[in-house]
Length: 201
Length: 201
DNA sequence: GTCTATAACGTGATAGAC
DNA sequence: GTCTATCACGTTATAGAC
Image (tube, rainbow over all chains, first blue to last red; front, side, top):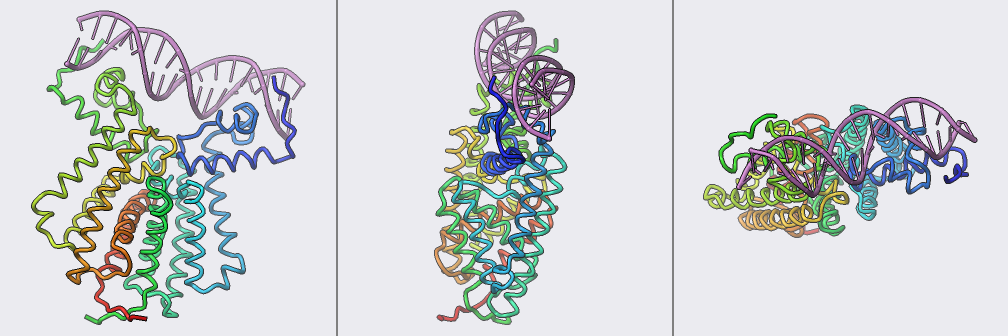
């Protein structure tokens, strides 16, 4: 039998979370197993159960980390001080990183596997959605006031469009390469940014 | 033992496909099993294997049917004769039906579970994507020529945006109700349809 | 041609060693 | 506190009955 690993304290837990997040975004909730995580870390699958008693716990923790990461990111000075257009661009850069890593977004996973996902994970995903909607709504509204963005209707609707499009674009990118993500990005920014005046028809 | 079912010839196969498609769009590829299909149809799981030797075969057939359905739908006289705006509206109506049934789109499933999906299913999904992109590109291009749609850039980019947004919107709807789908729809149509003139900046 | 009994394997989870 | 041996179950797939 292989002797216990000599990993720094707390490092195993962190590695488990890292792998779970990666595979969740590449294969979905049912697409990876404790055994695969254990193999990659050269421990037994039951060691994973020590750090996360059930798969529910593990995936809920992964979703919670998405939220925390985004909260941290959005509060960085460089984001707060950026213009609304710049904030949106940076958000799309963030999503593009997923595409480069052949991953989709957490909300896509939650949406697709919703009916077979543990309740705790769904709750975390919903909360993450709320955070994103709120942040994007504020960003888009601010950008419209400065005249940088042009759109009709509610900023909240437009925020949901941005989230949905980014999510869907990541999935298209899996099927047909990263170019599809950038195509969606171009189209979306073109629609939002193009200087234009509305005919008051 | 329960005696063999007396189902009309070919009906079992059709029912299997129906259930598989429904659950694929509600739970994802790994979210349903042969046993569940068998239970619902009151047969043994091995009977399902007679109609579809492997799960690969079953899911590939489901994806193939999505393609065939869309091809049939898009060639109906009512679609062919409709205006571009109307065709887009009808397409979104089609997607909205998924939202009403608490389902996501096939491309969303394929994108999210891509790395854990059988190759045959991926190929069918990619072909389906190609069909959708081609049809939407033509529709959007035609609509722009008549002045009904206004957007900058390539129609192909805009087509990918529509697909991505619809896909993502269905997933958001799972998390937060059908209202999110309609919000995305409003925003998207608002951006495409609003009468406006472009400043040649 | 259609379906059933059963196998072979993979999965999440528990009890207990160190 | 951290990890391993092992279990009980669910899943896909095969061989064979009718």
